[in-house]
Image 1 (cartoon, one colour):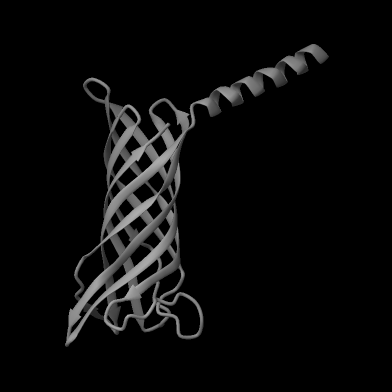
Image 2 (cartoon, rainbow, N blue to C red):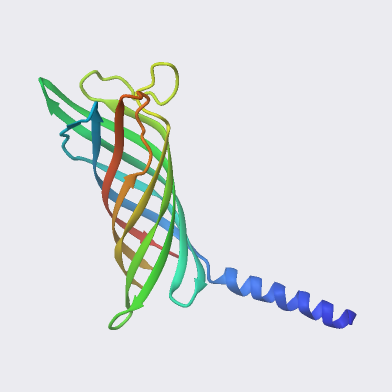
Length: 198
């Protein structure tokens, strides 16, 4: 009985090591084309897109054949352009972001695979700037410009060839990031990114 218990433990450890040997990790960089929905008292305000970036690291944890979970840690620059009523400003919001995507891979011709993914993200505001005033965006304090926490959803397609992944992604806030109860503000971001997994 004791030998069977030891054998079971050894087999479990071997399985754990085998699974973890398949975990891949690597850098990710990309371009963000972001905007923001902003409304007050039922009136929607029109904004323009702002180009930013994302950089960080992602991991890939296998769950089943052709199905993985991909968590990450990214520095992501978002925001919007405001151009109305004599106001012309770039509002850049910088976040530390934790996305967790469920990713399904479909075999294509040769070594290529089609990627379909979706999942939540949690962002925390760490900086940014208002180009009109030159002041930093504030996420804390009584006079903060935006709430620090941004909870949202990402989804999109991509292509994987060996260790390289190219993804197109759309992400949007599920929560209101405006500190004012009468105003609703939400991020929306289209991203093109490259990841290289070792």
